[in-house]
Image (cartoon, rainbow, N blue to C red):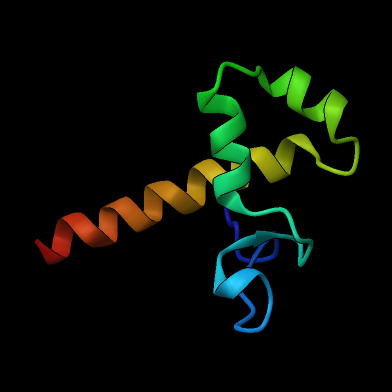
Length: 73
């Protein structure tokens, strides 16, 4: 998935953390909710401004970050 149109990084917003479509909802927020046991369906119900593609983009973004870190090590 090409997450470049969904995951945005703005130095003055949320301390430069990667956000969902410029909102004040970070990639890490999504992952925290999912890691806490919330299902994707529950996440989408509780935060109706998020889409399934937003959630999938967080996975793609973090997988890309992990690949870059692994290559550098």
